[in-house]
Length: 364
Image (cartoon, rainbow, N blue to C red; front, side, top):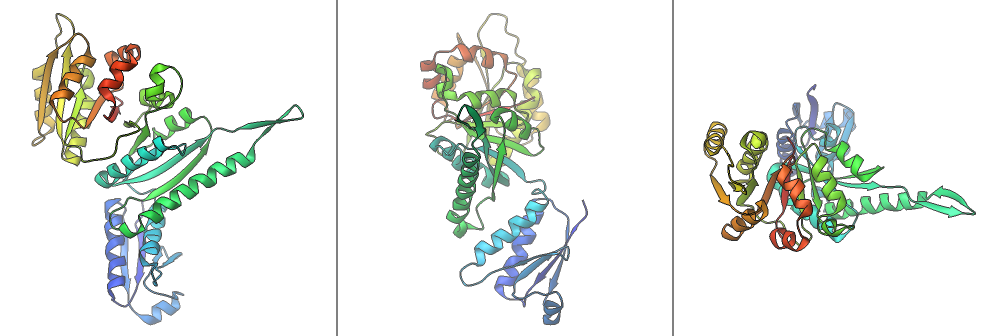
């Protein structure tokens, strides 16, 4: 990628310096190459057709004039976001937050916002619109008004988020609306294939007994996405995560996911718990192999291994949760016991164990 040629116009005021510092900070966070030139010569303002300062010009074509009179923060945020947007936010983490404008999806957004602050992420509030049809005189028509209404609802939602946090400009992640027409599962699966991506979504839905708690779309995405997926229960608010529990079936099978979970723990300053539940005689879980794996990849990561005997994996995990202040459960999506046995677990047992515990699923 060719470096961006950036000129910052000003006369050395505190506002001018802040624009320079913040732009430099965000471009560096995004890993974007750039060359920055500081211009304080008034004759250059005139020749470059800059009418107010401070201002930013990118590649001698895109001009952003930072507004004063109470609009300094909002216009600076908009300018920096536009510059980052043109380069797809560089290597910043892209956090996809599906929304149907329900309270559950809004709660997932609030959780995703906390993760974005921790992980240097940008939030893509994503609505996948499935076309509605209407029957008039026995003829079927697509309801274009419904699509336009949904798109406006998404734009208004994102605009309100940006406005709500404008006073916290230096702290809040950027928010982008993403409106897609199609089948929700297929579109989200396609988005999950993009690099530097994770999905954060709510966990309720409609359908059979299991899906009433988990959500049919959440379940499908959790099983098939190509990126990490966070599933957030409807009443869970974001808070600092200090203890994470990875539920392991086989060390070799789970190795890549365990490494990714360890990296995530390092980023957020959390302790990693790894649990294996023995449910039958002759279980040959390689604890020594697990310890060797962790020591090879992590020098200072705090971790604890739990080796339990229970009738089911779910009972073992429940036991650990009762003893430890676990803030999040982590699974490998190819975890056979979890994704086969869990679908046949009673809803009562599931709700007792997992209500209030966010889940993260890695995909090997």
